[in-house]
Amino acid sequence: MFDKDRFIEECIAALAEGQQAVREVVTAAVADSSGVMAELGEPQQAGITPLHRSPELTILNFAWAPCMSLMPHNHQMYAVIGIYSGREDNVFWRRTETSIEAAGAKSLGAGDVATLGSNIIHSVLNPIEKMTCALHVYGGDFFEPEEPRSEWDHETLQEQAWDIDRVRTLFARADARFHSAGH
Image 1: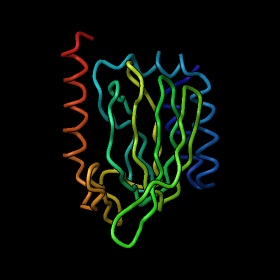
Image 2 (image 1 turned 60 degrees about the vertical axis):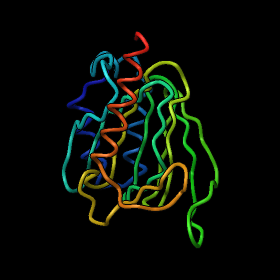
Image 3 (image 1 turned 30 degrees about the horizontal axis):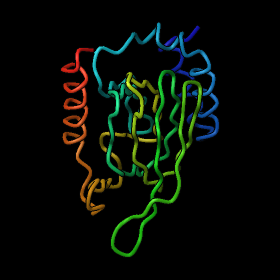
């Protein structure tokens, strides 16, 4: 059965071995999707909930509102993403001389895990009509990375400084739309 505190301890221990070892911990966790949901609780709203934060490692519980989309962005650190409920569609982007262009995509469902290198640019969409829940583990401080992060405007694909407050606002607006629809 999934235990949040044990999961955090295992991720911290795996950190010394690298991203692949962290991926193995996340893979084992989301293999017990119902156990993760039971331990962390059914999400009441869309948002980002920190489970652990240090300069070396951040563990977040994401709850994506139905049909929510997050602009292209980078992390400047590796990430391991494990889905334990719903679906997360990722579009991967590459830099061009003046902007970015789509370079691939991957759809993740419950039990799936993706690893992203520190240079990856991706956007995220929850394409279904229910909350999507995921454990995200980052090889650094997600909220205060050593190198500045970027995000790209959905429409113009122009780069700008990453802004956690703008991201939180997007989650709040998506959550408000979800709840105003009677959910």
